[in-house]
Image (cartoon, rainbow, N blue to C red; front, side, top):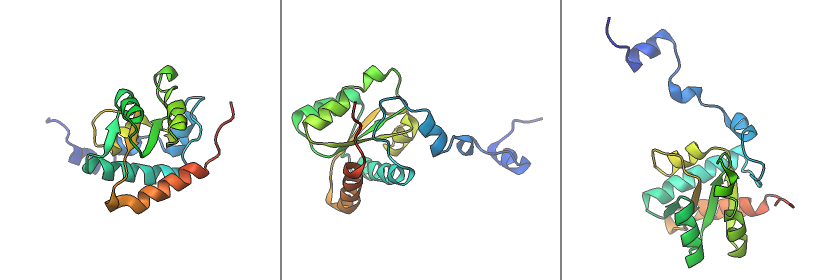
Length: 154
């Protein structure tokens, strides 16, 4: 009568907690009303990889306060906003600021996935990724795809 371990759980056929996470379509149904343009599954995966590469080189700004401060100072890059942030008022001013500064932005369905990509243990509402030569081609591809997405007309 000992404690169950992850190995014994796997032997019994149960799935680990990571596999029980909702898929992209389920997460996309849970986003806020203002989460437009929403990244496709393929673009979201590419964005997460770019955030991870940027985080390794300390070229990422995380959180609403830090991102807004960086945008006001004139830092360039692209912004990723989590679509499942509640209350909406926390992030509602970020797209307007991005448009004023001519910075590409896009929403992704999950705050937790954005935090994991940024190599933090907690979910992150907003991330600013700056360009670097090492991942510049992926960065440029992400920006091009983000700018090709249809913008909402409120």
